[in-house]
Image (tube, rainbow, N blue to C red; front, side, top):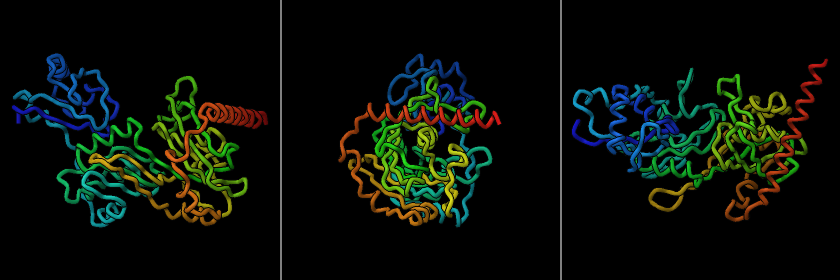
Length: 364
């Protein structure tokens, strides 16, 4: 309708972009001049507040857009990407991932090897399967965060725009908590540590790989604690990211010299164990805790994928030990500055030793 104010919820794909870029993506026939006029006259709003074309928007925010001009009434509708028609097998596969369902949310146990969203040469992904998970709701479910393709575990999905906005703010405000399990190479010298090392895209990789960049990187903070050891070759750790940088846990553990088992991207050949341990990555989003839009809390645990469970069994680790550990609210804060400095010094020494190894190889 041309005489009605329109409202749109910012999707995950548009998180962090400029408002004028959102219009270019979704309403390409709406000129910048028109957007600027709407902003100047106070008709364009984000979460009820006046907005300008240069403002950054976040997933879950609600855009108030004035009525379309008559000539643009049809062409200025948000573009809709064609959806893949799901087969019965795809629908069944999607529904088997569901481990929690209520009026506002779904929690999925994403298997390793399945991307959260599509991309170049990626045609099968969670986002493409969400049509199978509408159930009795009026609209299609919406992603509010993501997991790496090779990371398995708990993935929260909103079932309506209201819930999507609520959960997006929980993740951006860091009130949502994600607990990961991982097997890592070696055993850290500190059993319970905080890693605070800035992360940036590694030049020359097209943004496909991250690295520690203490000068230009974005701040990133993670916590780990050792649950069990398998001699000195490997240990099982609990990980918690306090920021949400790309590949954060993988980069941080590799930076302190203990890459995640199976993560050749960041650990190289040293990330693979002998003795029949799977070469797949051993990083799993074990648990997610987040406040619910209607009060209370969603607190869900995702079962380990088969390769991870088999490795745990082979190494003699008992899952019960991880689940009975006290959580953050029960165990008190660690001495943050001490742990941060020790972890930073350990990471710096590790990188120094690696540079020495590379120079030695070059000399030969």
